[in-house]
Length: 118
Length: 109
Image (cartoon, rainbow over the protein chains, first blue to last red):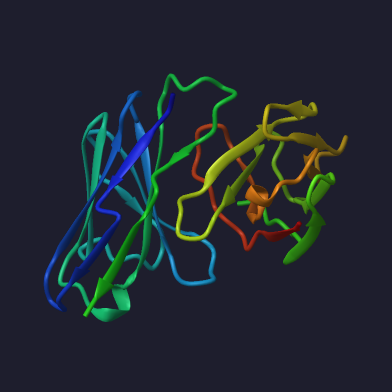
């Protein structure tokens, strides 16, 4: 149990365009979802936390108008990178946890999305 | 958020046990100690987590110091598939996970 599907796995887009990344919990209701980005050979950096039906809470230094997060249902959260630029190229990863997740379960992560902006 | 200190890298031979240490001296009394691992170009994978008592599951064991300022992840018999970056993360059971630099584990055949 506790599977999170992230799509697409890879995307290449032109500078100035927007890209949407989806994160779905397949077999549980994800009351909270987290979005991370990771640069090569670096650790994961938390970007924002989203609770279903509420506005996302962004970490310091993360532009909320650039990284739009929507968590409209208990099984889907989306991250839209608006007006993407080459410096936005990174590995984006989502994570989810449900209110009813058993205490001995951890957080479930998606497989990540490699974004390349050209 | 509690800070963690982990060795940058460790090596192990296949089939041998591996002990991955983590210092988290500023951990709060209610934070769990989470361990995740990440293979290249993949999302992190849950390994184990615990609060005070030692924990065992099919993947690993977690030994938590009595004062909770440190913990050790134990892989009983390392395999080549265990080569990954291992992250130790103090966090509440429902709060956000803040990743440190982790330990890169190399497993030699």
